Length: 175
Length: 423
Image (cartoon, chains in turn blue, cyan):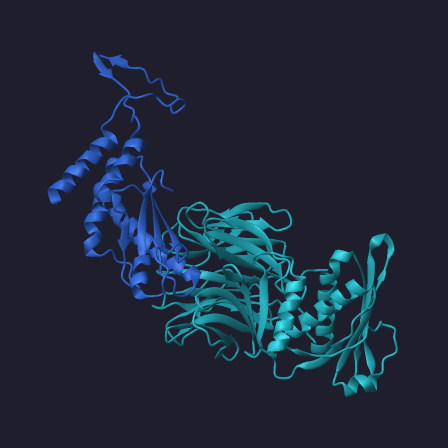
């Protein structure tokens, strides 16, 4: 399992940043991007190709396809069982600095909508902090809250509420 | 209210309905202890319009829970002689008479007079010139006049309410007259809309929309339908509250981490931090004199109501009993605070007298949210749930008068009672 995970991750990393060449994006840079020869050393511009497309494909497979972290009642601590998932996403963000992530925190329906929005924010923020600690850049991740407004499950019982106490990770193109 | 009366009232609402699918219907479920018996005679003159105007006046006064309607019989014009002994024997303390006559340019002149039956004296009257379509508006104004003369406080029948209707994956921010009629949609979205707040002059609504996959605060001009972003910082933007002068909004932003209070101009410029805590600060609300901002904070371990000076400074804790007291909202006179309190797993509307700190639970429901005072302070509108469906309810600040407002085809939530409009 562990090995498989590493292979998928490796594939994702290669897919994410390994491609070169491809058409230049017009207007992306005003510098002279033609190759220059300095003392026989050749300096060439390296463009990222289509990192978004490749990355988007990668995050739909394997462990990166898992996007939800669940929390206990009244808790904002990322549980042990979700740490490897968060680490995998952090590695992906580090390897793909152009890819951005939106973290949407959620809360169960009980009580004030605005207070629940703040509780959802705490869940999103906990995840954002952990990803940042693992190397994701500040400008790569945004933590927001949907509060109790977008429940995954809408029955009034604990089994259902526990599904709504979660943070979801969305990548560029998904939000 | 008898079942028959209720049925007649419902029929009346149906008859006058503007045929909107999401029409709010209002049911009275509790009335005041000493209702004033009042007779509203049919107005003389143009029969159709005259009857329609008198019916609006009757419905408004009855719905307030503070008046008891006395059968009035034949139409009576404002200048007709009044047989006070007869009205007294019928049990009326007050009598409204009036007329509707054609005026220039296809308009109508509505005149009315209010009599004190006990004192056998006129309490005054007014005249309005209106179009045939303004019968309801005129009826509300007459009801406001009668209410104020008899109770000594302004009526709210000419005000409007805002609320959100959710039906089949669609969210609509609607504005209706205080009687639930004439509902109009200001914004429709596939994504949630929460926390509407009226500008003090009633011309604009601030609210939170999730249409861009995150909460963003907008300010929306109702007459033109134009709107602008008031706060869209990194993270969540929510809980807008207008300053009494209408220039600023207190908002909750997370751009620096946790949910914290900031002030921003209504046009979105000049963001300033108002308070700092290690936890959550949210749901700001200005005191009517603009001196304080009341808000919810969990800085003490559980969510409680606090206040700070609107210029900043230390926070003062307001609620102490229980482990969940949220959404503090001040009465228009600044003397009382409505809030939502959790008691044994039930979320109920509570009221605190800020001078004595005495509290009272006003409701017997489980899922009360989002209290909003009527501009005269008499009723508190709030969101609740009946049979798994979102409804609005209103309760008088003495807990006696109760109303339920619901729509046929969906959940209704997030109510906000609009201000008095200058006429």
